[in-house]
Amino acid sequence: MKKDPTLKVKPINAIPLKTAQKWAKRWSKREGNYNRHHHVNAFLIPKVDLLEVLAEGVDAVRAYIGVDDKGIEKLMIVGTKLNPETGIYVDMIGVGATDATNGADDIYDFSQPCPSTCDPNSPMFQ
Image 1 (spheres, rainbow, N blue to C red):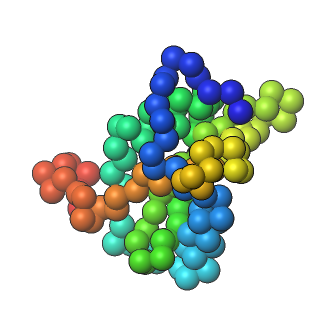
Image 2: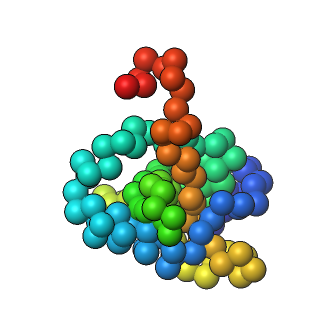
């Protein structure tokens, strides 16, 4: 995986692939459909987290939804690269490619669900 040299950011919110898979499975298994989590309106995404995924030299990003071990909804972001032959944006998940001490696999756990991180004065808040 080639990192963008213009963005020098050390990943701090990356999580292991196995954790991301568990959270995503929990979302689909526990809920079965998107509308069951009707109390989650949005996710707050800190700037540093966006910089981390952009530092991978991505063409786009993909968001996966999951539920962590505490039952909190999670938004997990992975960088993608366009495969010009297929037209598919391929997930850039470097299993075990990042710092072995933190066990991260280029999957970023940005999420702080709304509620409770909502802006009550936003015209989008319902």
